[in-house]
Image (cartoon, helix red, strand yellow):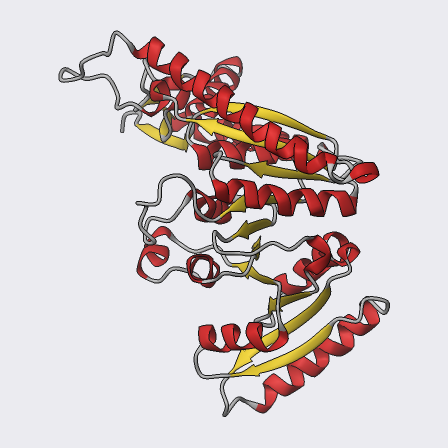
Length: 370
């Protein structure tokens, strides 16, 4: 039986090229399938193909490459000073998010980076084909978009500087960053490089025609960011960081809750905010809910003796009604959840809790990924 060509792995264009180089250095013949030569820098789903006789050796090379990437990622240390990433689109909602981020950063003595991503037709256009007509004015369009972005950032920086100066001795160190590309993708990518304690964003931007099903940029960042995302709703009335007194973390008694509580202890408690850890349960809830909430209270009291975290049960048949009623009753200033990763299909059919709350709440939403 003759040799067969098999697909070793499917990677992004950049990683496929790296693997191809490593394989050839080990005398393993390979070629790339479905690679877009013209738009290779932004293509994805490139197949690395080899002969089946080289499969075992190629797997070792692939594993070495992936381990090397993991080691480099682990070696990247957290910044000494805390950082907050503030993506902006120059809307009034961005300004509101900027005020919240500024107050938070002043309390934590954190640095802020104002990030704006402007649309780049070069990387978002359709691939070249027989029916593709190249726009001769494309370069001029890109320059015009970049100039608009620079002008918008100047105005945003002026607004931010005015608010920052009002802090007096508590002024925050900040910088600005402009990037080309798709906003949600670039925000996530840059956050991995910047490593903020949180990403602070407004829930609505200049384009209000985006449907809830597709989601805003903020919702997409929530789906993919490795760092906590604080979403500031368009209808939220910000009265100063000192006026934010209570945070409700909705627990489902999962292991991820302990990770979230540890982060809250580090980045929220210094603001003087009281943390309430609550679970929504039906009126006829199981006795185990009482046992679990009591056990959680005991654990958190021992783990954070100086914090005074309060654990509670919210009795309501409807999760959203229960949460909203509790928010009003306890005067909650920030809602917090851990968002569990889901498949694309399940997200479209049944959007997760955090995303639903994002579009139907006037309370800032702090979301953790799990």
